[in-house]
Amino acid sequence: MTLADLNPAERHRRVAATFTERVRAVEAWDVPAPVAGWTARDVVRHLVEWFPPFLAAGAGVGLPGGPSVDDEPVAAWRTQCNGVQALLDDPGTARRSLTNPHIGELPLDRAVDQFYTPDVFMHTWDLARATGQDDRLDPDFCAALLAGMEPAEEMIRSSGQYGPRVAVPDDADARLRLLGFIGRDPFWTPHRGAEPQGDNHPL
View (cartoon, rainbow, N blue to C red):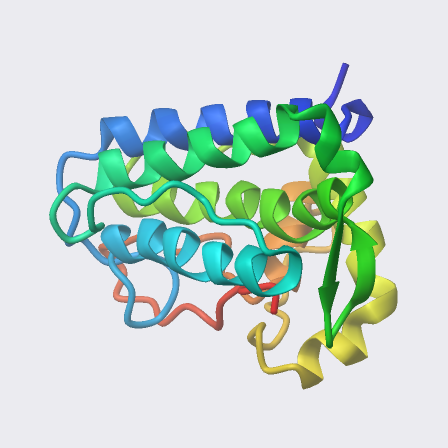
């Protein structure tokens, strides 16, 4: 069963587990990442800092607080990861809603699944590439995300939350095409001095 076939709780469990593996294996947190001006630490910082206010404002949900990313990036991530998983595992979450001026009203579990879990998934590549780890991504989920995003490209670009699309080879697989779509140079390495494009902050 691929990521695209799972329910929100199980999809987050799988996606977050892979990101956690990458986080735990980081040896140097201040190496450059494929987002301009970011380090590996900033990849974790982004996820830990944008999502709790999103939940609090839209659904009145407070995630457990953890240590700062500056002091303990692994523990900061694990605290948030466990908090989000507990939220998705709660049977009552599907009956709750999240309201946001940009997206309207959605079931809470769907909102997490639509905006947060894909962000973790895509930033897994950033962290892995920055720190020299396995940067493979589930190809079916890459294709599913791309299929959902391409029809909304004009809105996505105008939001300023993604950089310009990066050209990839005509025969590129789903992972490379997704990375190019969200403004990443799929061939970026910390040693090439490449200037990556944009970020994939969902809101």
